[in-house]
Image 1 (tube, rainbow, N blue to C red):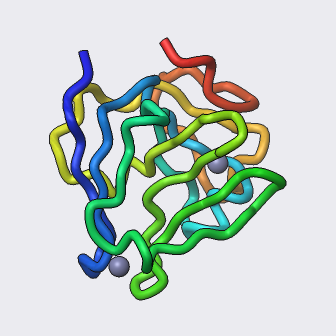
Image 2: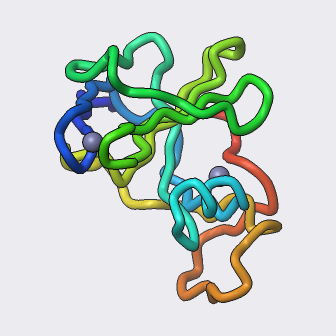
Amino acid sequence: MTSKLLGGCFCGAVRYEAAGLASAIGYCHCGTCRKTHSAPFIATALTPFEEFSWTKGRDFVTYIETSPGKHRYFCPACGTHMMAEYPAAKRRLLRVGSIESPLPRPAAVHIWTSEKAPYFDFCDDLPKLSEGLPPAD
Ligand SMILES: [Zn+2]
Ligand SMILES: [Zn+2]
């Protein structure tokens, strides 16, 4: 079901290891993802909270709290976003673009389409949710 995933930032200063994916991969169109990544949307998926670790740059990687209790971790040297977490809820999301291991499945859903960029037009038939990812399956 799950296999270990390795990833990191563009410059190589920060690397991580995660247990696998714990949800569908979703394309997130929320305004905060769009702004923090400077992109029309990003790919994201839940990962088991307790089985994530920074394997390089643990004391270097930093985060921004973009909403109360939500920490978005990124490399302060190259800017790559890799993970977001809600520590209180023990909920953790990988930024799929930072994963270097083969992925177990393709993206399956668009999320937060209520905040979609006006310049982006959908070009697939994936389900479109106005808000966030459904609970982990
Ligand atoms: Zn970096
Ligand atoms: Zn988002």
